[in-house]
Length: 458
Ligand SMILES: Nc1nc2c(ncn2[C@@H]2O[C@H](COP(=O)(O)OP(=O)(O)OP(=O)(O)O)[C@@H](O)[C@H]2O)c(=O)[nH]1
Ligand SMILES: [Mg+2]
Image (cartoon, rainbow, N blue to C red):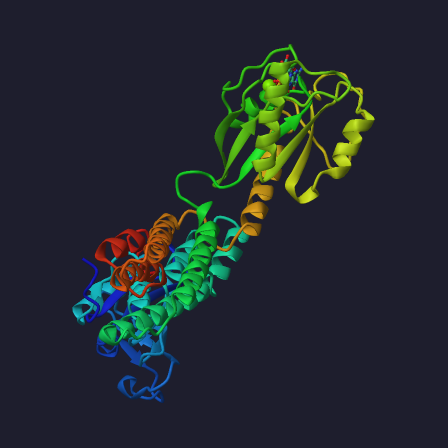
């Protein structure tokens, strides 16, 4: 439904609602003609159809619905050096919704049609201006809920996966060309690439695909990428904190130390930033020899701590902090952990601990502060772990997985001494899959899925 790219589209590009400034965007070959139907440049300006370079032109809009002309600045990209690589314009004017609607109506009467959501960015993609990872990054920039997410999205917009993917595709295209050149001389048994060389190049390509897939892996839509684990001695109140954070009594709580044996996880939404919260069995002090069940529980807990990106280290404020705990605290990575003093509604035996968040799962004191701290830590961990915008990469990941499978099959075919024709066929499929990520090939389906999530005007 999106594939017509030769007509001229228009949409309001500024945020909905009243504002000091509103922007209407137009793109397509007839941009200048369409804009000329309502925009009048100031007297001394070059006529619009003679503008050759990107220009800002002061003038006014004459709209049927309004008696008085409306002051406006036209930003015009008359050639292909625009976001969509086609003539493009933006009318900047007062941000009044009825005015902006009337401008749209006027542009449509002048020959434009209303743009679909994301259609400007889709044109940028189809014209080769940006690749699909960057298109998704545009979405990330628009959707960014926090400055850190914006940083990540902007980094991706500047390059992200695109560069290494392009290099990889270029190398595989060379390899395919060499293989295919060999087919032409099959009778003479002439080879343009040795089996060893082919094997080495395939292996390198497979490794690179795996690295790229790894970069996108944790960003899948369904699961929150960042894991935060509750750690601490038995009975310090981890499960109570787990329940307080998720807002339901999901974990069993009791005065008996060693209540939690297995681990428990829940998705935690921290004002739009998601993480997976994990409750584990307590770590007994080394003085007491644990029973076998407790030992197994502790091993499971240790594994969860190892896999987690963040630790919420819980200390019981009703008991003294011993030397072993002090040592452990000194060893924790400040960027990756949050220290919490629990049960602060009870008479306390610990001194205040610098940087620790004081909480009570009974009164709810400090729970909001903990959520806020955790939110920041999740964003930090998210930003540190890669350069792919959160939640936009399931499709890229799937293509990378398929490409990796094809490369694996290529290598096996080579090992088995199968014909190079079969290897070339697999390589072509791998290239196709990589192309879907890089934007060189696309299907309506992919376009629909990515661009329908944009808002109109972007
Ligand atoms: N007064 C008070 N009691 C608490 C608080 N948090 C936990 N408790 C009590 O402390 C005991 C242990 O709590 P849990 O949440 O089960 O502790 P845990 O760290 O999960 O313990 P294990 O699962 O055995 O490792 C229970 O009796 C809770 O009711 C708190 O903030 N205030
Ligand atoms: Mg517990």
